[in-house]
Length: 164
Image (cartoon, rainbow, N blue to C red; front, side):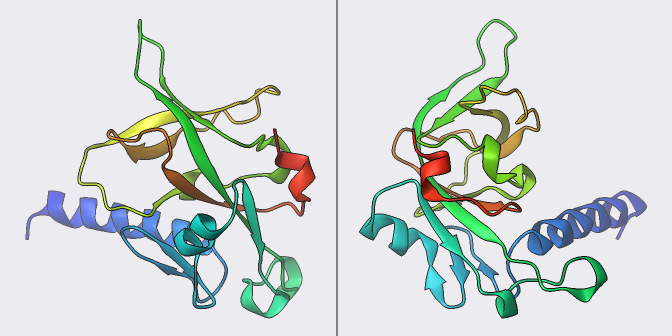
């Protein structure tokens, strides 16, 4: 094992730890799904319209400040369009929800329903009327219309707050 391999491995492990902390306790992240308390977010989204929200109970969420349990909300959205990089502009992924009000953890966005072996690229999440979603999401290069994305959110919100 080389020094470079050790450094890269520890960097990836640190990124995975941050990503796992963004989800409710006991969440199982697979290559094509997110299971929260035994419920598949991909199956749930296929059975209902998007955007869809799933609110965790207090006992299933990680503790927040001063040991108080915090409630996490997961929003599942459908990709409306994946725009490639044009004229030195960043790639964009347009979804069927307005995410500004839910404080999304964009570093933890997951593709649902299919495994992709394509290279991971940085996308800008759209729509973003307020300009608050400046953090880029990492998603596969073969992202296309109809794909499902699961996004953990830190702020409580109602479905009406994110519907377009």
